[in-house]
Length: 219
Image (cartoon, rainbow, N blue to C red; front, top):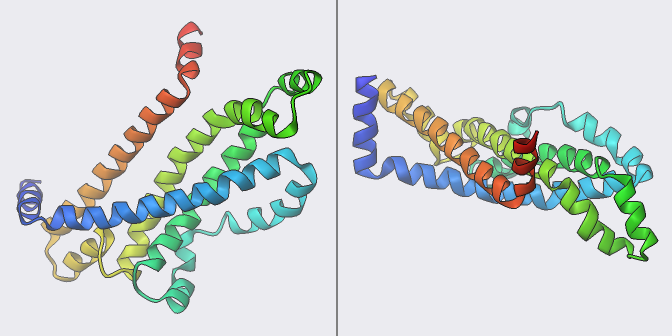
């Protein structure tokens, strides 16, 4: 532990620790946003339409059990070693939590609220915006936390093999050099940043859905 702490200090002073962390965080941000941009609208469509759900769900359930790591060899063949492969693998890992939780959130919407809005003559678009989305938001935000965790775990595997930079690359680089304290310093950084990202998303969840905390306090 003392050797790892000393390596952390040296890597931080050299700037290497933060440089590699920023590369991985940038990839996390890009893949996370892409996964949300695909998973949330698709989940809304599947949650609102039983026919569309029945058509798309077999494909989703076929792909979902396949780990993103399993796609790395094919991804290297198509995308090569570089920026695109880790982002693609992280996107794959993050998209399904967004999708599944959005579907669950839409289906958990109280049908009486939807019926009341229709009775008042509110259009379908307004019902989606003002009834369904607020009701599904807590589930979507839980999906965001799960998506960030899945993407972060996929990042390590993808960067170990298919990237010339990032925390995963640094772990593999120092492993090959048999510099175990530095390797473990980067492993610690992966855990620390994963924890901080989750805390950030928890804070966003509390800010965007304050009524959840209020309901829990009353319970």
